[in-house]
Image 1 (cartoon, rainbow, N blue to C red):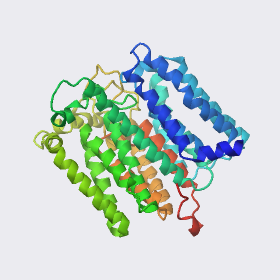
Image 2: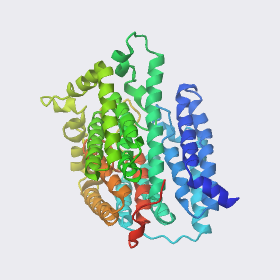
Image 3: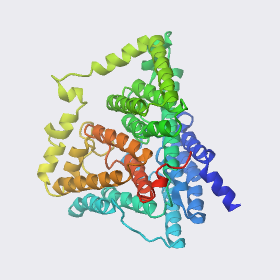
Image 4: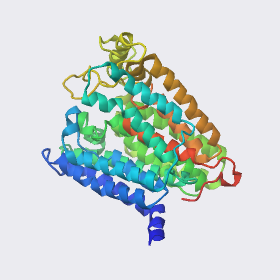
Length: 471
């Protein structure tokens, strides 16, 4: 019985089922009223956390819990969650407690010996940089919770880095692919919701206008930029599947599907980065020179041309919407207030850094300085400026050291196609991070540190294992 269940956990149906549950929970935003949605959402999380607990207890290889954790972080569809939501429901914390209980039982039952691995020390230092500023400020519950965020990231990485068994790249890529589809369907659902409110007559002309704007375009667990950043990150599976299944057209269709919705979302940074990712895939296909793969690329190209012709008004709108925002005469407007966030505002990242140059001000600071009526902390929409403000010089040094260790981890395992593909999209996402939120953000960090944990466990002295198992 146990072996049968494990075979199911290894298969395709299980991660699809888990991430379908996550998607179902997310869709509550369209069916449940504002007064009830938070509690209903938190109660539904037991559909994810109870399996997490059971798998953690009965199976030594924790890779099977990865789909659950991915689904967990992307399933909250509540848009207006703010700082006041920390104590909104005890049920939400009970779900977190179940996850922690499962982890603790697993560590004890299987007598796990913790090793720092390649990037562990850098995460220890990052955790210190998170909590250090809070030690010199008046106590705050929210501040303390944000201060221990670095230790949470460290814990997640060390747990998986020391409990995943064997080469699980194939499993990680599968979960990436399914999660990417789930996130894309979140965007499709937003458009469908907008369509139900549409009163126009020309669907193609109004297609991009139907997609909601403002808070209605927020998936709840983050904003639209957070969603599209992860789609670009997960696009590494395209090169992986091109390598693994050169006769399949699926990778190109997958890339086209997610790219289409990123362009519709008008998330400018991700519009650029998904284009870079697509170019990397095309370049890979040309260098691979597989005949069937080139035929599939040609078919995909013809499909793109057909779509461009049919949706010509839509294409024009997307291009106009993008290029009309390019205005170097007013850079702050072009960057939606980022210059103010970084430098010019009295509470900008630079000015906050000048007040606390050594260790920064920590994560818990003024409410969002560009819109104080929003009940959320200020996040500076740039990896460099955010770390500069929250961690000071010490935080920047730690960040540089962390990136060095991450590079070393990638370099050691680049012989694996999945790792080299992930390295490309990780670099692209960090390029995006110069102008937006990536590094140390909750969702991005959980996803990447789990991926790093998988990479840490790949054999490096077995050339015959360089080709990962079939998915």
